[in-house]
Length: 177
Image (tube, rainbow, N blue to C red; front, side, top):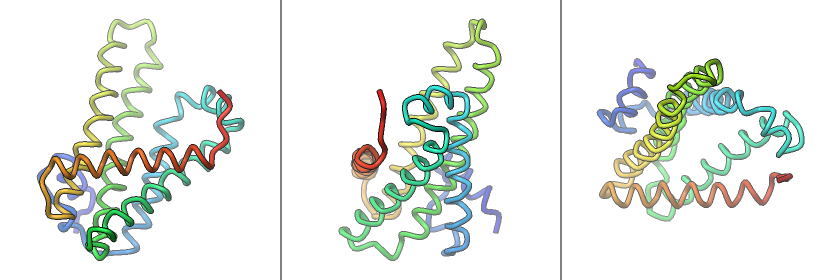
């Protein structure tokens, strides 16, 4: 099994979450790497986030909480639709794909931060925005394949899961605007 290739293929909409082996071990690994990539992607914004959240430790807590709430939300959606048996592969796919995309975001943001005077900062911003949208497209693909539905429904499930995750996160994380 070549997990990184499968995650890359899912990111490119060439593979399905069913192509990933059903493995709690792989789910745990992808959850940890997704959390780490989330923290890494936020690193250039850490001083500002630390001011908003109160401490830099809060960024780690926020990342763990967001991943837990997202997984819970996905599990509830799958349970309601009668596909809870597909949770491990769907969540492994989402965590694996998010790791790849966040590393790309980190690379773009790091290059942008290193060259603030460059005229390419607009391009870098568009790339980050494009990658942020692409992760929703990939999540919609995962929902579509997992729930055996149309892409539009997968996109709807993606939006609902992100909104619920954000609402849950804002109820637990103390934000100091």
